[in-house]
Image 1 (cartoon, rainbow, N blue to C red):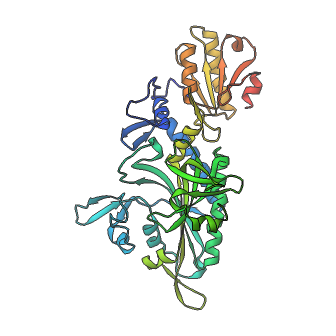
Image 2: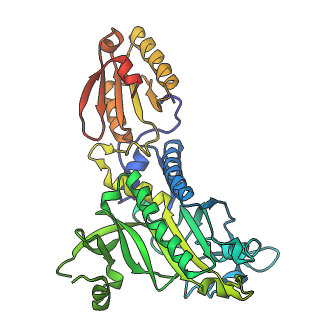
Image 3: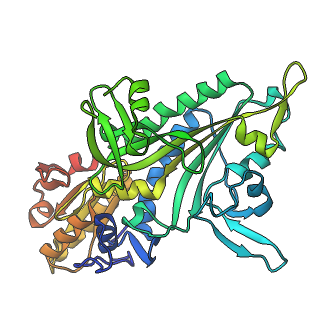
Length: 414
């Protein structure tokens, strides 16, 4: 894409009402637009990042035999009343409205109930199991205080997955299979070494759960961590009993700030029993199925990546999620020869299959470099007079600042 074609613009100053680094940088760089507190629009560059995150998540969920669907955001009141989660005293983040035809409707903050109800149409016998489905869905949560930029919003994109099994053994086997699948996601995003499977409370879902917590100064959670043993405990459930069960002692644990990037919940049979989701066993007995729920915050991950991968100049995207791999910067000025060379090189890069943003704007070199640093693409390729005259091309690595001289052919093979 030519940067002159991109309708978004960078900003030198961060919005005064944004305190979080992720929102400040994403707004300044033109990745997102703030609609209101906790609600953001995702612009072309921001959408590209989200789609790259979703691609990685999709590949890993498909690898454990889950099937993608999309459900509606509108929620039936009677369905959630069956599990007692329509009550605002139990779930305090509902957005609700009145239907003109009469009755109340909710806007999805999660989807366990509707997806369990839907599955009654497809799961009848133990032979129909196991099944796992997932979706990328916009969730709405009426948070009292939306803060931390896109890491905690009132509207956000989540990958939520749900599993259904006919016996406890296969249910637990699938539940355990999601842990390495999730860790594969976080490794591919560049945060695997700082992300820990954490024993935690289940909130409005279950008594206990497992969270995936990423060490992050801007995170809202606190966990106690034993890095050597790979044991992590959310401070909400840190008790002597928990420590004993996990085989650790506060003095062997390190207190760190973290951001929750994923979670998994083991419902057992209770959720299905509440919903009336049952199957016939081989002996002809009706039993409630075993259910699990598995979430990854897609937009939250984008915010966490910015918090962890940025510096005083701007964002530093991991190559796996960057909207473009290369930022091609032309320093042509009024030199038509350099401009023609840069234009031709841009076309050659596209033909070579390189994802490239071409800064063809008529600006000073300093402005272009500042914008390039702010946008945070992995590589900056600079075309000036020397390159156009047949010399080597300067390539700057955004993450390290390392500068290399490469031949034209070497750049086209990046």
